[in-house]
Length: 252
Ligand SMILES: NC(=O)c1ccc[n+]([C@@H]2O[C@H](COP(=O)([O-])OP(=O)(O)OC[C@H]3O[C@@H](n4cnc5c(N)ncnc54)[C@H](O)[C@@H]3O)[C@@H](O)[C@H]2O)c1
Image (cartoon, helix red, strand yellow):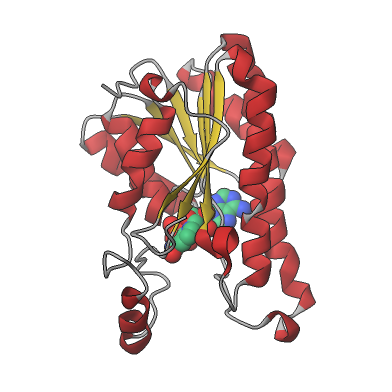
């Protein structure tokens, strides 16, 4: 089950964290994986990991908020590899500057576009860049990583949450446009995921863990198997859905 040989996957923001683990798992299942990131050294490190484990991968360094340069890079890398992207994981969603927790009334309007550009235009750009080839090939899988911060809401992240909420809305409508040609579109909504690059202090962490039925936050390893199901042949009848993978943070 879940064999991805012959497929080519683009994972955005895959230079670390959740995206890096998704990239590794898709490669383990046989896909050629294009590891996208803003930072060359991050993308290259994940590619090296995958290759050391016997998988196939290439770096795709591009800012997904810029359509033309993203498209050029995709054409360039897939041209070299002789493949077409038929799996897209829209994972990039936390701006390189991180997320500042603030009540909306106290937020700085100058910072809003960071979230909206990345989770809005980044999502549209990456999808627009690869969808025609999926339609042509009559097979495609698009998975967008969203957040319970947008799905159920969290104080302090209103703008980020609003931007993350765009993914499920887009996936639902797109699913209705392309389901008849073998392309599925889904979202996975994450609870808080441990990340060495933006960890809360011990006191806040202990409080956060109590909010989860599982009494722990997630890890990138908790997320990648759900992505694998959705991008596989076996997941072909799941489309237009938002699937929470959240350790029981919210149970509906
Ligand atoms: N970490 C969490 O607690 C959490 C919770 C819920 C949802 N999520 C979602 O999961 C996804 C992954 O989160 P993470 O914590 O692994 O992120 P992360 O910040 O650890 O890594 C994301 C990567 O995306 C890259 N990136 C940022 N902007 C980019 C751009 N414009 N173009 C290309 N690459 C770009 C960064 O360089 C970084 O390497 C995001 O969509 C996030 O919103 C995360």
